[in-house]
Length: 292
Image (cartoon, rainbow, N blue to C red; front, side):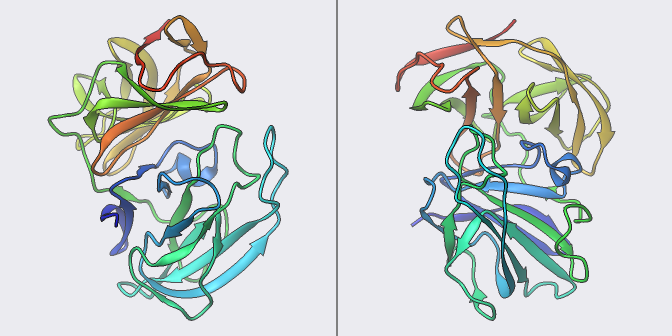
């Protein structure tokens, strides 16, 4: 059984991630991720698999909603919004998306209890992995796309965090390659000699986040090269724009990197090809990513 580890909190409510999974505050084009009021939890399971709840509390609302058609993939045909009232604060609601629930209104959940099946929502891009989207919101305004409370990241850089762009391919499919780094937490960058963890879809979303105990503005570098400029400070992260960059793996150009954080296992990054099926790589292969 997986162990569940707290990875984010706000208003005395914690969000958990499986020790086998990963999570991201900024790796999405949607509004809540641009202001750090949303987090995506990736349980490292396939679409349509049953997933445990990343929060505790009472299910108060379930609504099936329409979703756009998937671009380049077959989508689930719908999405679902679930609201949970946490025991630790009845003045807020936890908003959850992208799960086909097995729970009902009135059910009481503990961390890890069966929540539902992972949907391939039409809101996803073709390279988006199965995940749960979560926000902590005022109980009187739980459903809008904007208006959630800022989330605090509960994990920071540690002695095993990696600065080099080297790793091993652990999974290949037409939409992406997953690369395991020889580090925990995530990939390290620098701002004004202060190091932190990079988070986001670089450069294809056009912006990124930088997790650190000392948020600063300025140019952000990865592996000695400037990749963006940070201009907005939050409690424990900086947010800014990424530059136009070209990444390649073993001389194969790629669209970019999806960067995540991990609570326990070695960090993973995702390489997105220029087109579906566009990566000539093998599982187990040691690779180096170049910034051109």
